[in-house]
Length: 566
Picture: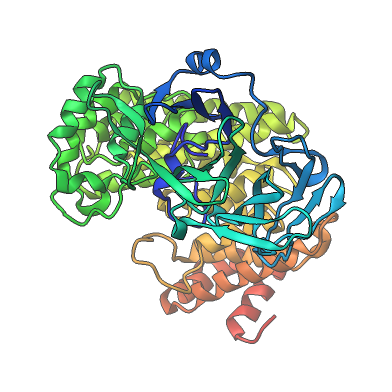
């Protein structure tokens, strides 16, 4: 669930309101109350007499409620799901998964025997309860993108599996993705928890009442709180943002929120990022939240944590704000090791957006450059010290620090990190399956848009063999001209490509994986042909470079120039 830390975790679906709501998977009873518990630490108690809900702490919940029978769904061995029911009957199920070409239907067992059920084959059984000779089954859909609502509750005969009724949101149920179903031992009632809220039902299956979860600012305390309403309500995602941020001045944050025009507040979406913002008004257009949100910047900066485990989320949050101070802070931190190795492309895109919006200074602070350059230099020195037979994990980590650090320096305006990489590859011995070759592969891909990497790219494709040089040759491929690439065309570049093609003509150079030569040959040949198409480059190459090539390399150049495939 996302209640603890919402963020862009949905690989293939848009975030929804209920992603940040509690997952009530446990329902408990006393003679005067009904309790609802979420594994993330949200507890509600329903007072039977007043028919009101109160949110309580975990300690308060445990003082009032009896020892729990556990969640409504327990994961067993070998994919078996245990579905506890009030009378102790053993109910087991296997989840369905009908996605990504998989056609896995659910199954159901009662007391160890296969049982007939009326749940759709490609829906999973998420909860179960037995009452008055009926088996009530909660449903949900499972797929590549996570869980989804299904058909609510399917009630059937315990004896023969015949369908008795279906209870869904059409009948007033709070939602169709059922988390828990529990029969009330003290009243003729059944209680359910769904992805959207809570429902009270009669023993006959009639929905008597439903309450809907949402999060907003509590009018009493002024602080973010999960609450229940008798009608569906939208969550205030600024309240969610404040709770997750953990600001030291919650009252100040809440007051700042009130300064944001109501019509703009929905620009912060359910996953804690920009959402449907088309209002303009910010320095970066729609790259950032509208500038009215900048009243929150002091609180977000105060909560910023650039430690390795937190740095990604810190960049994710701060990069929403089109603010010069934020841009400067992130540029200062950008060349740090944690940013280079833990944020992927997020931080690079962020700094790019600030630069495009004119919010970032062209010249980075000297202290930042010096510190980052030191990290790149130490990583390269460590690689030299470890050698090709060194600790693989240390080599892998050093690769990341060196390449990502050099890219980070370039993004904030300093080419010095890439210059260190260039010198490293020029001095490398080269060869096959060498750690330097693997780092070259990653560097050529990461730095593909960096013209400053040209010397390193040329050196690498001349001395490494097989798959690692593919990205390097693509660095020099001008089949599709790109005006942003200023120095990729020339006779010296063509010379490096000819050498790479000739090397790739010898699979025996790659004793363990000779098939790698085919991919390298194709990529490097394509790049060489793209350079030969330029008449001026071709003429200069044959006049100044061709005479110095080896006989084999000259033959390769001639065959390429002739046109027919080699």
